[in-house]
Image 1: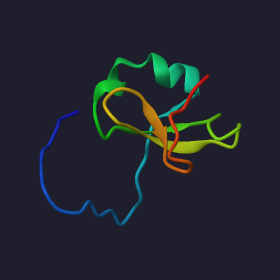
Image 2 (image 1 turned 180 degrees about the horizontal axis):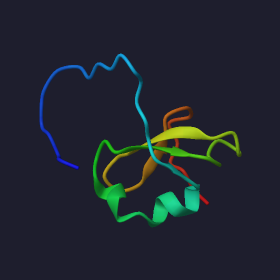
Image 3 (image 1 turned 30 degrees about the horizontal axis):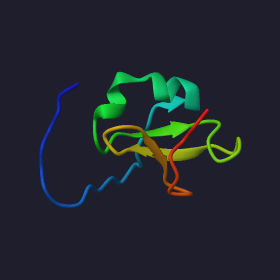
Image 4 (image 1 turned 60 degrees about the vertical axis):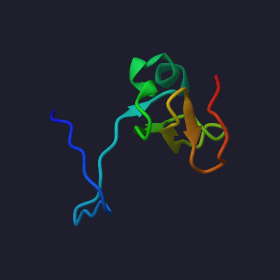
Length: 70
């Protein structure tokens, strides 16, 4: 898959698809150092699942704003 750099909003008429991981698997990813990477953690937020975004070091639960942890 190609990497693209652009400015402006991202618009999709068909939604977006993200990869799903458990919190433990997400924290083991080397890709977590990619700032802005968005994934779905199936057991984040007390098991409810949530979108998480990388801050370049770890993943942050977008629902709570808190770092995901095992």
